[in-house]
Image 1: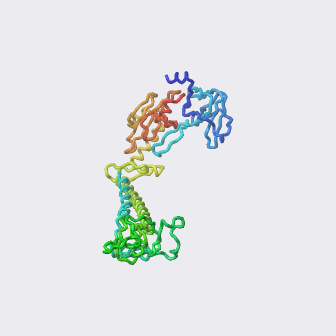
Image 2: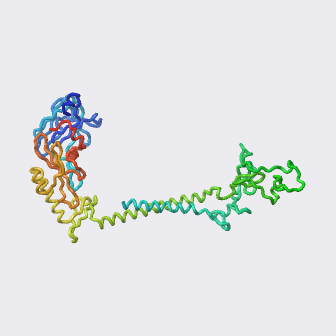
Image 3: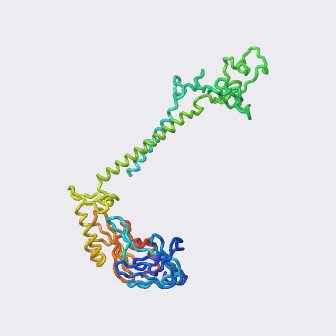
Length: 112
Length: 316
């Protein structure tokens, strides 16, 4: 129902999840971010499987290693273990899933 | 609750001197006009305190150059007073008819004669005869502001406030310390353990500021952590059963929230079990203790609120 409502009225989603990644739409990419000549937005440190963008896009990286990308047209996100995800045109930030360590009261990044 | 009581006590400590100060103005007839500055006042025949003209005041100048008729200088004190109309005007003697019997002498006395006469003229409530006119009786020291006394009062209140604040801090410090040593409740920094009353040796974990537990509990935590890294990821349902995790809630998305109170006494560890939408593999992760909804838990792992997670556009 919600899916068809969004489809009919052209409401595009702003959040996507791809495995341990969260792709969040942003209004713009920070000016301090520099171009990165890659289509990989996350590497699989354990499995060696990467999250790769296919289509017209540009990846950016800030000094604190935060990744953004601009989808100039609708692009797809691929990973060997996950289904392919369609992402509409726009600017996006790439965030990693986290987990909680209850004994040290800290949060850690999930490593795929 | 106890902190509010202490705060109330400190407030009372600060307010009480203020109440006492308001009642400290009454003086008897044999007391000086001012204890702090006794030479600045003198008493007249009626017992009123009159401020002595300070040195350097030029009494020949008018009180006001703009409206000299509105003010009159007191020849005794050198102070200026506002002239007010008398409720019983005094008529000059020359303008009054002579009375054969002189029975109206008190009423017909001339203004110029008043200084030397022992007769009293009633100027009305709140006014006194001063010079040739009735003026507001501000020579009473109770009506004149003494800024020295005000300054001392403010300073006294500041000192009371500072002392009260220090007392509050000290009481709070000792109260917290007492709580840590006598109560068995869980604190953020320290976990106090009560078992059978025996003295137990404690083991500090890797982060000494996080928790202090007994050796027995520390051993159980290590076993739990190791098992979570192995069985928890490969066979999460077996792990939940093995460690007596209790089911709390599930969501439409198929996420499940569990709680485990058998690892750390007095604390419920929260775990979320979710299924990857692409691979179908089950995952088990810890989430903060305050989470009570499975979607909130999975949303937390993605940096989202539960509502944002439920409205997510695509998952793969």
